Length: 117
Image 1 (cartoon, rainbow, N blue to C red):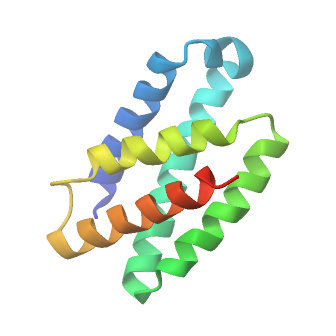
Image 2 (cartoon, rainbow, N blue to C red):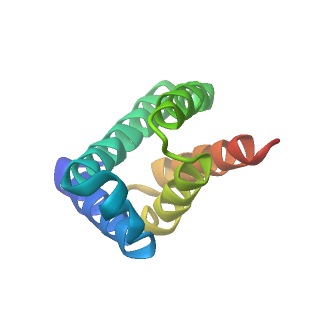
Image 3 (cartoon, rainbow, N blue to C red):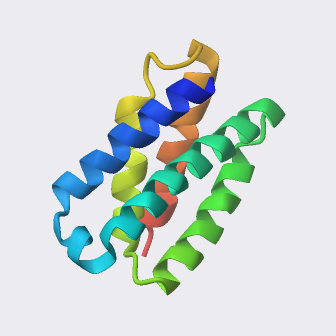
């Protein structure tokens, strides 16, 4: 996935999150918006690394770490799930079919993991 596509995906997903949850502007402001966009770049980078190494477990380990960090900063797990769901919706058609399939599978596995009590 090239940098321009990553930027487009990060922009689209971040805008969608802040549109769906306008209270995030009050809670985190412009700085939070910027961090959310950066986080989406990190999500895509980790998905890409996991794909290159053919190791979906790497993304699940990243997901565990991400949840720990974000919940310590008062970001609910539900927002991570929502973010990953938005990536699942946006990634199709943005990269080659093998990478797309791998990334979506990783994201779906991560969502299932985050949804567990």
